[in-house]
Image 1: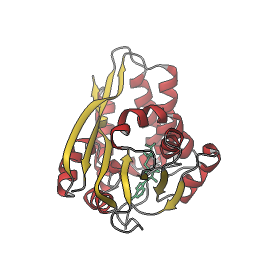
Image 2: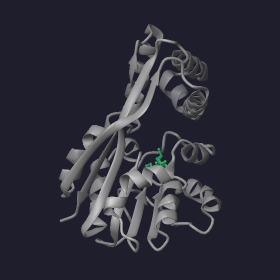
Image 3: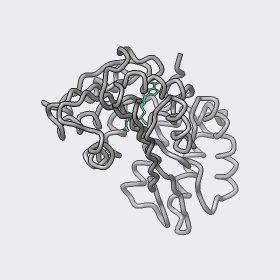
Length: 262
Ligand SMILES: C[S@@+](CC[C@H](N)C(=O)[O-])C[C@H]1O[C@@H](n2cnc3c(N)ncnc32)[C@H](O)[C@@H]1O
């Protein structure tokens, strides 16, 4: 059984959609494994905005979006218009599809939240047909790599990190993808790494707004981790102050691992 998603909130579907250029992600990560009539599975799809972008690029493909949140899946239905993927509420660790059902299976920013990430990747490999492709995309260093770290921020990060781990979140999921793909029996592995977020100096207003919303959604989790809503409010203020400092550097990278099921 999977634990609750730590960013559970009615605003989360819109936040996920707003922070990615889905057509660009699809152009960068999928053309080499796609064909016009491919059967495709997006695991941990949120509102299905990336799955919709796949369908817009390959309108004759059959695309299924899976997520544990029925509410988030439903939130994306209006956005897709005629390019609406099939939606299925299910756990990545127990995908309700027969072995070998899909030509292409991918996950984007899912595995960092899944405690049993090895089981999830094994399931993704299982539902991929022989010769089909699995594409795993996840972050490394998210919420971790900052410089200089003011003392109060350092103390807060040190208190939040164990609570994140206890909730199944791994800020270094990206570097584990290669190992997980191998363990799931995938072969012909290709690994890419690219910058994901990079803030050098005072954060731009649009990016500040994304972080402010993310931290606001995370406020109940922070209150639980730090012992009180007031402590969570202080943590949010300290982090936003850090992002607004002229000497701030904050970054993370994104790993993409593509493999084939032999
Ligand atoms: C950060 S969002 C990523 C959404 C989308 N893939 C994207 O890139 O914008 C992670 C999503 O994974 C879903 N999720 C978390 N654990 C899951 C699990 N065990 N099985 C399926 N979905 C899960 C969450 O509900 C959430 O919608």
